[in-house]
Amino acid sequence: MLGRLATYFSNDIAIDLGTANTLVYLKGSGIVLNEPSVVAIDQKTKKVYAVGAEAKAMIGKTPDHIAAVRPMKDGVIADFEITEVMLREFIKRSQRKRLFIRPRIVISVPSGITEVERRAVTDSAQNAGAREVYLVAEPIAAAIGVGLPVDKPSGNMVIDIGGGTTEIAVIALNGIVTDISIRVAGDEMDEAIVQHIKKAYNLLIGDQTAEHVKMVIGSATKLKNDEEMEIKGRDLVSGIPKILRISSSEIREALAETITQIVVAVKTALEQTPPELAADIVDRGIVMMGGGSLLRGFDILLKEETNLPINIVEDPLTCVVLGSGKILGNLHQYERIIMKSSRF
Ligand SMILES: Nc1ncnc2c1ncn2[C@@H]1O[C@H](COP(=O)(O)OP(=O)(O)OP(=O)(O)O)[C@@H](O)[C@H]1O
Ligand SMILES: [Mg+2]
Image 1 (cartoon, rainbow, N blue to C red):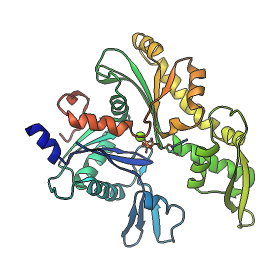
Image 2 (cartoon, rainbow, N blue to C red; image 1 turned 180 degrees about the vertical axis):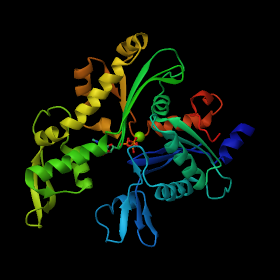
Image 3 (tube, rainbow, N blue to C red; image 1 turned 90 degrees about the vertical axis):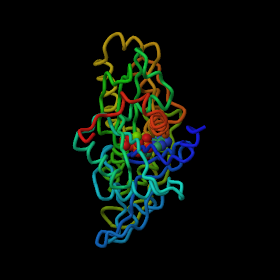
Image 4 (cartoon, helix red, strand yellow; image 1 turned 135 degrees about the horizontal axis):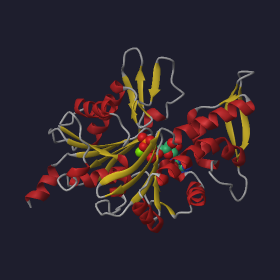
C-alpha cells in the first residue's frame, strides 16, 4: 500500500535525451512527453521562443536573430546552456503540477560517452531540477525496454540507429560485452541527401526537406518499383526557388555510403564478439531499433550482409525510454547497470 502510494506521489522520471527526439517517462504513468530536441531562441537576448515540436517547425524559417537550435549532436551535448533550457522545460511539462519535490532522473546516454560528456549530462539535469541523476547506457536501456533477458549469460545483440549515433552492442550478464558506437546515423543520411541534390542539380534544400525525402522514398535496398517525389529548394545559380522531381534510386545511391559505414560497424562488432556469445546471436538474431532502423529495406540489407536473422522491434522510437523507465522503477535491482560517474 505504502509502495503504491509512493509510486503515485513520485515525480521521478526517465529521459531519453536523443539527438533528434527527447522522451520522458513518468513513474507510474508511462511516456508523458515525446518531442523533437529543438529550441528556438533569440541569439541576442537569449529569450526562448519555443521548445520541442513547435521549435522544430521553425528550423530554417526563423528571422535572423532567432535560431532554431538542436543542442544535441552525435548523441551528446553540443550546447550546454540550451540543453539545460530544453531539459528544464521538458521536466516541467512532465511533472504533476501539485508536486514540488525535485525528481530523481534516469537518463540514457551513448555507451561510448566520455567522462566529460557524462559530467555535462549530469550537471545539465541537476541544473534543470534533478535531485539525483542516474546514467544508463542506451543499448542496455533499449534491450531492457524490449524485454531481452540482459541478466542471463546468453548474448543479445542490439543495433540502435538514432539521429546522431548508431550503437551496436552485445549484452550479457547485465553488461556490455562488445560495443561499437559510431557518430553516423539518421542525420548523416539527411546530409548525404542535401549534398547529392546540391551536386547533381545545383539546388539547395533544407535539412527538414532532406529528412522528409529519406522517410518517403529513401531506402537501403532496391525498391520493387522506382518511386518519385517533388522537392522544393533554392537554385544556387539563379537564386530562385525551384521544384524538382527526384527518384528513389538516386536517393538510394546518395545514402549508400552512410549505410555502408553502419553495415561495416555491425560486421566489426560481430568480429569482436566472443565465440560463445556469437553462437547465441546466430540462434537469436539481432534486434534493430531507433528511428534509423525504419529506413526501408535496412533490415533486409543487414540480413543479406550478415546472414543472421534481423528483427526490427515493435517500438523502435520508444524502447530506450521504456527500458530506462523499467530501470527507474527498480533502481535497486538494476544497480549494476547504472554507470559510475566520478561525481557519486
Ligand atoms: N521512417 C523513417 N525512415 C527513415 N528514417 C527515419 C524514419 N523515421 C525516423 N527516422 C529517423 O530516425 C532518426 C531519429 O531516431 P531516434 O528518435 O531514434 O533518434 P535519437 O534517439 O533522437 O538520436 P540518438 O539516439 O542518436 O541520440 C532521425 O534521423 C529520423 O529522420
Ligand atoms: Mg536514441
